[in-house]
Length: 334
Image (cartoon, rainbow, N blue to C red; front, side, top):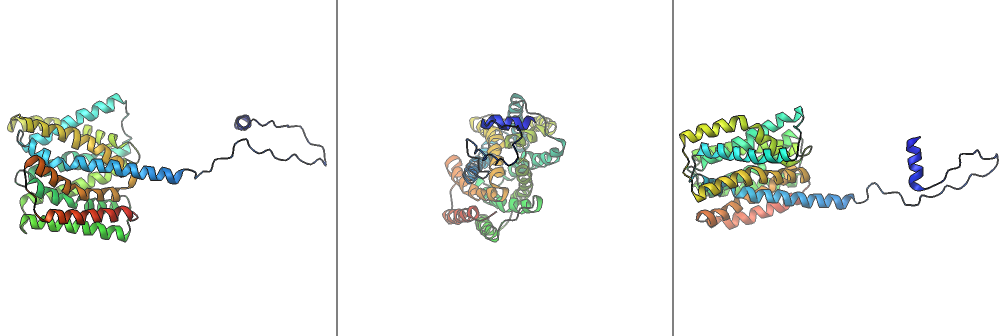
């Protein structure tokens, strides 16, 4: 009866409950004062806005990530590789924990913690440590093009983990982009793979796993909470790890070392992951991952501007091929 009364009051229609005499025609139904809302009204526009917002946020994440290797190179001027990874993770966790406390975010449900552990092992510990070890002997340009295979790796793991089934056009463009990046990598390294490449290929696998789980979790909780809880989850490991590493690798603080550390902690490790996971949740893991095909090229630009490295003639050709692949993957159904 309460639901009926509220409906009557909303439309302002008086209802006579008295019985009608036999043979008296029923009164014509009174039309509502306002037309009923169409359930699908506005959905196409909302979907387009969500897709644009997702592309923008994922793109901002790619820009943030493209600065990771140059920032790591700067950080290694003041810290050892193990100390750099430990300190950056602790600082990022402090930032993330501050946001979680200020927002009074309750802990995630128990069923989400295994996925958060994968994110933690992949993007908080595994990828930073492996790439930092690689950059001791590899240039940022070389590392950037090897990690250019990350979009294809992420798409493959996404298909296995969350049942994503991109179209054949999508896969063809993704494979073409990966082939272009791989050819560029082999040309840069002179046809021989090194120990640094081994670290980088391992980094691809753990990072793709972290991206896949993070993108899945970002559908049920905000992206900043995904990376925030993953960082906090690592504190029992990263705090003693940072203390132990600093005892063996004393820091030699300088402007570049501190600037690199701060960007890695605040930009790459937290803020970049926030917009990246939000973007993946909006447009899907496979399509978002293909935006990272542009990341090696952006890193090459930063390596020239910030580190003084020189680009090879193959860079513009690879850039054109990668941009074409990105355009195709974004138009293909994922």
